[in-house]
Length: 363
Ligand SMILES: *Cc1c(COP(=O)(O)O)cnc(C)c1O
Image (cartoon, rainbow, N blue to C red):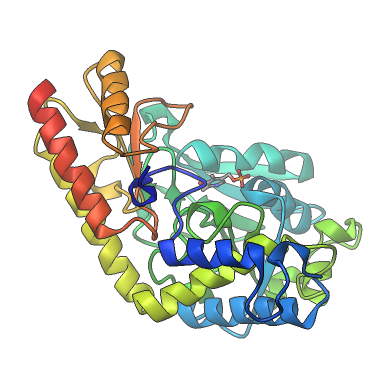
């Protein structure tokens, strides 16, 4: 097994040095001599971990002081529900949703019990192969918020511009591309990203929310579902996922110290995506990329072969040669290469060469 050749869609690969530190921390943390799995979340050690994770995220992403950084549980799916509970319930306004793929389609049904919703663009009629152009979105200036997914993990579609109207709160699920490149954080009122695609292990979800927006929530919410309770408790409202947050902190350190920040990370991610797309595009009779070129993601490349039997053969052959995690999402089938931050350019190039060779033999 070569852990370096893990192209899984999620939970995704983590950097080798982070995995080594996590392994050592399970035996005993260098700072405390105790296993990370037995550390109190009320300890000074854990407060320092949370503080560093937040500080590193603020530095890497340029998060403005107007925004809080929270570490929550429940994944992306809880955010689909928690956002409308806090910002649609009782607002008397309509919440707007862009539906551009599998994950963004999961959000509006969770909002409907809380109030009026409107889908402002729906890519499903065309099989979710592209993202909307700004002129295709009919947005209203008095919406409660506009929600979208910046990277459609299943279909491999990534926004290259930020949609929305000035004055309308903007909410974004960045679960599969936060920290993959710089982002205009100040443009958003709320961003969420579970850790397991690009930030760390599953179990923790980063929420970046503006203070002003967080105050708009109704008073009727259970505290655990109210962003203000987590802000007041500085992410220790109840027992948080200590281990997952520790590993996320190590990933932010790795990005800062070993990668050199998000511009460098983005350049590397572009090179990885170009290598894989180049191999697929060179053999269009055999490989068919799901996304139209203008909407392609640097994180996930979904593609098909002429028939499912050949797809199964590719998966078998890839596994035998050490390439893992190439199955497409169960909702659309086919194949998918995920190129999260921890996937090296060497790994992506090796896979690209392997795909070229496989396509040459079978295409
Ligand atoms: C994987 C994924 C989700 C699902 O998150 P869970 O943590 O499993 O609830 C949501 N949004 C996006 C963009 C995803 O890629």
